[in-house]
Image (tube, rainbow, N blue to C red):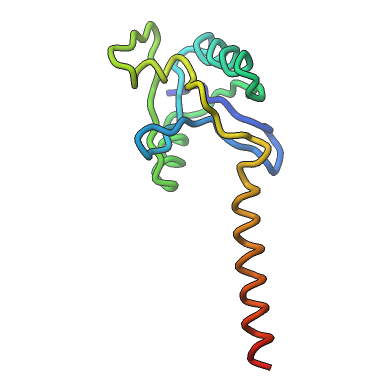
Length: 126
């Protein structure tokens, strides 16, 4: 079965998939209908979030991806009607988003700190 996901920087080295954080879990949204995925993109854009592209992909491929990274995946089915506040996040993005441009900066800064401390420790040995 094919589904639709939201990708950033599609086809580049910085390619990423749209996900939401819910109760400490990373959840990748999968849409059964392309129209629903495109509507969600429009809502993201309205919140000044970078516009992702809608891409069709095998549901098994996304499930494997999520399993490897310890993410969850949620399918937004055709005619989905939310029953809880958490369900609403599957059809309407949260008000607060991580900045796409800086999501790897923290990781890079941590790497620099680690490298600097290693360098300092090595210099102390001399």
